[in-house]
Image (cartoon, helix red, strand yellow):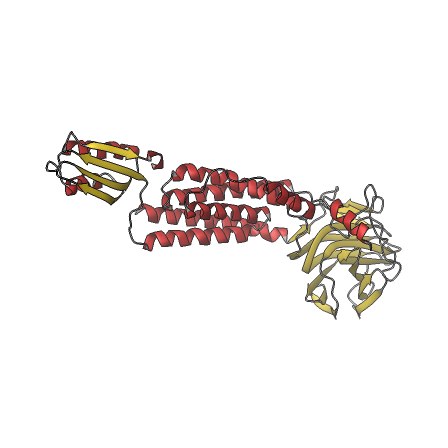
Length: 461
């Protein structure tokens, strides 16, 4: 098989495997599932005394809560619930200090309320005869474009529409009344709004004040709202400035960081192979391609650090203003590949793995197709000058034929001939260093007196 075809097939196969391997990871980032098998409840904030894990089940006593930080929208939430006769199970979603939805489950009844700082708006309620205490029930909530649908044991029981919907928020499980509530097999899927992945740091709007536990939810969804926390913005220019400079980037999950760096390294290596085999630059393509690895990894690291902090982003602009390339980019193709490497680093740094890999695969496929269908013009990386003081002894055709047997590409760029001298200049490309030696030997066989000059031999790869 032609080498160009082989490179294209192998490259696209590797990119396809990367895309397929990243797609499940991307789906996981847009939701989470919890079986409550870990007693430490990683990723959850909870009431220290009223919440516990018993036999793989989350058990919440009256007044207790468990909050999973996140920032999801258009969610589908599924959870198993078992509550005592005197208890009410409350499922809160889009949960933030500015507002939240509270789904209240009790004997034979389900109700949905929208709670905000100064108001509590009932969105709907329904009598559900099958919803009884002392038994496990599967509750499913779907939210799309302000419409809420509540299923109890796979049967639609309540549909409500909010004309002024909340956009995103966390998940909170609450026990009210005089009895214990149990939760199990929680699953949430939806669109991520850019917050940290499940188990990350608190989101703005639900973040507890430093050194404090989150305020416990009210006993009744219709009573006083949750007290404002330190993360809430208040009016006034001074407070806005303080909030701006106090904002910190969310903690980066180590697994996500390492996966993105590994993908950056693999993508940079593939891009380097593509540039070496399909590039048209006259410079040393193998040496230049080695820069892609460091550039892509560095860009990924920088973007992951500053992506969630405006202050750090502005600091990056100031830092980059004093950093300049001291080595000139000689050809437009080199600049294009540098931008390609930067784009890959930015995409992976922003955790857009699937989009980045699809864009890279598309770009490589287009480059490969262009190589397959373009005309076979000379694509050279070395200058050869051949001179003779006896032009009658050797002809241009003989020189061209001797070089053509040992070069991958050959192009005559200048030919001068007088009665006493002849000189020819070529642009050539050698695939291997031994081809240069073979070409020199073939030229010497034509005439031992030939003057042969090879220039810019750093372009051999």
